[in-house]
Length: 111
Image 1: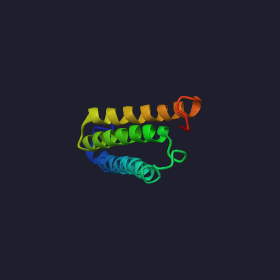
Image 2: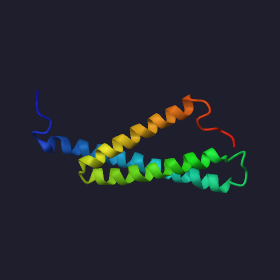
Image 3: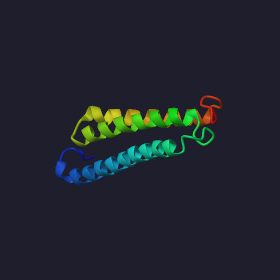
Image 4: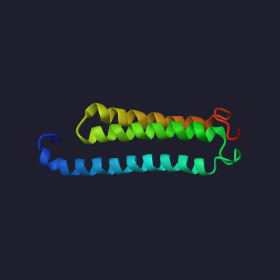
């Protein structure tokens, strides 16, 4: 078995491409999070279309996307701790989404 870190020249292009892809996806996450709140602001006069739960979820998701984007930027510069934070926030948000969907009444859909 060969050591994948033995020759950095072999894995550098793949790693750079993977980091670039992650940065693009995290940027899309941030953009969609911000766009969601923009739409909520535009439709905010109608509490049926934009209940309080939309504001709560939207703000939490926007904050997490800003943090993940900052961690991904640090990770792209080589910070191992930042990679762990990206992984942790991504996992926590995925679990939170599953919990919100799976448990009725945790977050009401209407105010």
